[in-house]
Each structure stands twice: as C-alpha cells, then as structure tokens.
Image (cartoon, rainbow, N blue to C red; front, side, top):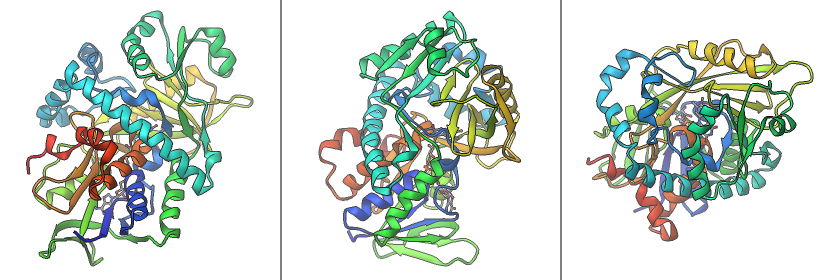
Length: 420
Ligand SMILES: Cc1cc2nc3c(=O)[nH]c(=O)nc-3n(C[C@H](O)[C@H](O)[C@H](O)COP(=O)(O)OP(=O)(O)OC[C@H]3O[C@@H](n4cnc5c(N)ncnc54)[C@H](O)[C@@H]3O)c2cc1C
C-alpha cells in the first residue's frame, strides 16, 4: 500500500498522527474545517495525568447512579430524551464497568498515558514551548471524611500502578494552595503529572512542526469519504470545496467521527460527553499553582495563560444540540465557595464534547473490511494527554511495526466494537 496519507481532523489526536506518520516517511495532508486545535483540543482542562487511567465507568459507578440520575450536579447532567434514545449505549457503558473489563481498560489506558507523557515532553521541547508545561501535578479535593473514603478504591489503583500521590491534611493543603478556602477535609496531590497553560497553543505548536517539515494543511469542511476504486480513499468536501484522494485515510475527527464514518457504512458507537468552560480573573493576591478537581463540586479549576479556566463535568446530549450551559452556573457557584474568583472573562461559555465509546477506550487501528481506512478516535476525557501515544500506536500499526506496543494496541482495536 502506498505512502500518501490524508489525516482528517486537526485536534490533538489528528495533529499528532500527521506528525508521527510524516516522521516515518509518509507524505501527509492534514485536513480540518478550522485551524488546528480549535475544538475539543482547545477548551479542555489541560491536565496530563497518570491518575486518568480510571475511566468514568468504574465499578463504583453503579453505587453513584441514584445521585447522578437526579440530574442536578455540575458533575453529571443529561437530557432525558437523549438518554431514552440511547438506552442501549448506556447499558453497554454500565456493563463495561464490571471488574473484569474495567481492569483491562485501566491497564490499557495506563499504557497509553505513559507512552504519551514521554512523547509530549519531547514534542514540547522540540517545539520550543517547554515553558507551557507545569510539573506541579494536580489535586483532588474532598469535602468530608466520607467523600475521602469514597476515593479509597481509586487510591488503591494508583498504588498498584505506581502513580505517585500524597494525602494532604488541611494545613498541608493550605501550604500548597493558600488561596483555597479552608473547607476541604482532605486532599490528594497527584504527583508525577503535568498540566499546560494553553492547550490550543500546544496543538498549534505541534501543527507548526508538521508544516515546517513540509506537511500540507488544508482547510476543508468534509462531507463524506468513499473508496476511490483504485485501492485508496477519496475525501469529499462540502460547500464546493472539491475532493482529495490518497492511498490511506486516517479519521481523527473526535466527536464528529461517527457522523462522517456513516458515509462509509460504519456505525461507531460514539457518544458526546459535553462539557463547558469559562475563564475568570482571580481576586487580587489569589492564585493557583496547579489544577484542582473539587470532587464534591464536580468541576476542575485550571490556571491558564488567559485566566482561571473552570471546566464542568459531563452533560449527555446530542453532539451538536444547542448549548445548555446551566451546568456551568452550578460549577461556578461551587467554585466561588472554594476559591476567590473574580469576574468572568469570556462573553459566552465555551462548549466542548468528549468523544466516548462504551468501554472508555479509544479506537486505534484499521477499520474492519475497509482496507486503507484507519481510525484514531474516541479519546473521552483524556485525548489531550493521549494524542502522542495514539499516534505512535497508529503509525506503528500502519507501518507494520507495532513491535513492543502490539499488546497495547490490541486493547484499542476497532474490531472489538465494529464488525463491519
Ligand atoms: C470540558 C473538557 C475538559 C477536558 N479536559 C481534559 C484534560 O484535562 N486532559 C485531557 O487529556 N483531555 C481532556 N478533555 C478531553 C480532550 O479535550 C479530548 O479527548 C480531545 O481534545 C479530543 O481530541 P480530538 O483530536 O480527537 O478531537 P478535536 O480536538 O475535537 O478535533 C476534531 C477536529 O475535527 C474537525 N472536524 C470535525 N468535523 C469535520 C468535518 N466534517 N470536516 C473537517 N473537519 C472536521 C474539527 O474542526 C476539529 O478540529 C476534556 C474535554 C472537555 C470537553
């Protein structure tokens, strides 16, 4: 098979795939309807953490269900009509929280996160943006001894996987983050983890590496894909933007992958876990040294170049249904009790979509019965951190050199959820 490749989607995942394939000798065109890093990979919390190996559908989820289904927290909201239409997906998601599947998922995500952490550091050094990377970890905040006890299973997983953590009593937390209100009984500092102060700038710096090495970027809204009749694939542009063909095609359209893959007859069971963000000023003298996750409040507050970025938990709804940012209001109320936030800095809340498959594992590999069509999608809550590792796995598979990563790649094979 030839070495001309089109990568669809210039979020963190697509940009990393384009760069890695280029470095392995392919001639790559990266395609997006917007500039690189303008969607989900722009608005996330910027956390790159070893602790993200635990998926949302962990065995404790069943116990949390009655609270989550009340539909009134910043951590989890849903539109009842969406849930009813997607009951089958929801059931699969819950079934994949059973211990045997969950343990496999944790091991797979840990492998992908570790592979990505090294690659991110190398890429940031090369791109000259090392200053954007903080190595101060992040902190989980607990409002009661009972809530802390609820995190015991996760702490056991961290210990098992060697994720470095330190439990903090209130005086230790105050010493580390003096601007936080003294309302947290306990906290867990996840160390050996990173965050960035501008996720979009990171994606754009990686895209610049790709372009500087001769990679082509094409702005084009894509309407569909189909085999080109000569063993390759054709990408059909919308709005009279023409078409492109290549020997091989990588679909890395994040939340929009499902709609596009339908045009090739594939139904990827991908759901959008929507979320919002808003930037705030800090009141005079207040600051944060690292992102914090208020486990009871259901939000993450991350220090960014633009200000303090407050991100919400999950909202289940159709990917492109109109925004319903009440969840941000709930998160803001909680966050103002924990930190001296000043004014809002954005005119409207940003909305993003975490692209999630029913087993919380991304899909990385060739589509069944469609030679030359490759998938890199479904990175749920951790696609910003796991883009580079995904690219290494995908490029290894595409060049027939999965080598040491073959077992890891197996956990992400599309065939587990797609039979053509
Ligand atoms: C609130 C929130 C907080 C998060 N926090 C974190 C975090 O702290 N750490 C972390 O690792 N992850 C986090 N995530 C998850 C992470 O942001 C995503 O998993 C990741 O950005 C997905 O990257 P992607 O490249 O797959 O998709 P995207 O970044 O969405 O890229 C997809 C691209 O496809 C393009 N596109 C779509 N349709 C078309 C079309 N028809 N034609 C042409 N182009 C098209 C879009 O323009 C876009 O650029 C968070 C997500 C949210 C919503």
